Structure formats: structure tokens, C-alpha cells
Length: 240
Image (cartoon, rainbow, N blue to C red; front, side, top):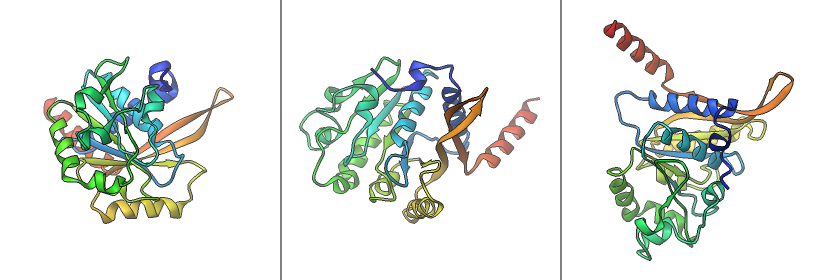
């Protein structure tokens, strides 16, 4: 069974928070189509896989065709979120063991497809940086409205930087009360050093008190939120 709160409890405060993040992403850059989005973190266990799978679900609920790719070829976890097999996946497609059509998984959510990691390779960085991988992603753009790639933590390995080179945007997930500011800064610096287009950050797993109870929430801060709001206000005035 899927572990996604946006599927199990779509009316929860956390699900609403994901929809808020979705809206922020949609207006993060009105001048460029945001189609391929990479999600990474500064270190392990900050919840990037939870964030990306729930976020992808909210986009699929807009009647958009969405694909989630497990690009964490070192420690894959997307298949566990959806409760599906990881027997075949991305790595098998890249080495021609099988085809994308044979590997891609449909989910119970309409329009939402998943491509798991597949066999964990001995050379993940080389596979992700290959011309074949870039062409593969480029070809998928014709079939999907949004492609979300779950990348390894940028603070541990360079894979996320490689993936961001052929992505339209990158989101950095930070675990509240788990990641110190210097580690977070280092993660951002590594993304900046490879020219990654950071469209925002998600502060994950911070407790919010409501009616005497705690629940874990998600906060998204877009780097271009003010610019987007100005454009939206200008557009609304011109339509008035």
C-alpha cells in the first residue's frame, strides 16, 4: 500500500501544504516552462523521497501527466513509497536490458506513473551523467507534463548536481531540527557551483501545534516568489 498522505488523507493539513508547494512551483518562473524538476537534500533521512512522491501526486490531481523517476541509484526508495517492485527500472533501460514501457509503473492515482531505480549499478554517477540519460529524459518530455527526479543528497555525493544539469529546476529539502545551517549552506553552494536552478527549498518535518496536537508540516520558500507575485498582480490588473 502507498505511504503517501496526499492519497490516504487528501484533506489533511499536510496534504494542503503540498498543494501550496505545488502552486509556488507553478508560479516560480512564469517565463520558462518548469517541466523536469529534481528534488535533493543536504544529507540522508531529510524526507526528500516523501516530499517528491507526495508533490508529484498533487500535480497528477490537476489532470497533468506526471512521471516520478528514482534517480537515487545508491539508495533507492521511491518503490517503497508506492509499494511496488524495484526488480526493473531506470538502470535497466539505460543499459538496454529492457524498455521504458516494460519498466514504467502505473499507480492508483490517475496520470501518475513511476519509474523505479532497478538494479543498483556500480557506477551511478557515470550513468546519470551519460548522454543516453540526457537523451532519455529529453524524449520523455514529449509524453509527460511533469517529470520529477528523486536525486541523492547533494551534501554526500555529486549525483544531484549532475541531474540538475538537465533539469528545469531543483528543490532542496531540509530537515527541521536535523540539519545544521552550515550543512544546508554547503548543499546550496554545491548546487550553485554546477549552475543548478534552485527554485525553492522545503523545510520538512517541523512540528506545528494546532488544537493542542502536533503534526509534521512542510514549508516551501521559493527564491522568485516576490517576482512571481508581482507578475501575477500585474496580469490581474490588466485583465480587470
